[in-house]
Length: 163
Image (cartoon, rainbow, N blue to C red; front, side, top):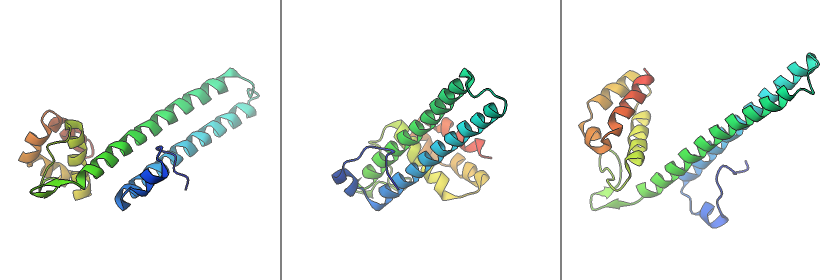
């Protein structure tokens, strides 16, 4: 597998933990799937246009531009999420006098609110596969209210959307 979702030098790549390497591989697989899907969509449209004798139409060029732009936007979202996950994972290996940072046992208050959002979201997404139980547990989490601040309701709405 060629890793091109993010630019890392060989020393940076070798410094990644196994968990971080796994995150990079998963993100790369998502990127490859997005690009493959885009190529399939473009090929299908070309066949439709060819069967109707419109292969030289500018409609295909416009369609290709739109599909490429959508794919690039999706890839950028995956890339940004990976960068945040890698940053959090490297922060997660640190800790304080209470031990390593982990939500909810030892939350990291040095994180920005958006990074805290990701930490709590990941915690609840990994806790259970049942969306209703996840939402109920999150609703009873008093630490999350103070830890997330204004992002509490956003995460609540996100978890509720899975129900």
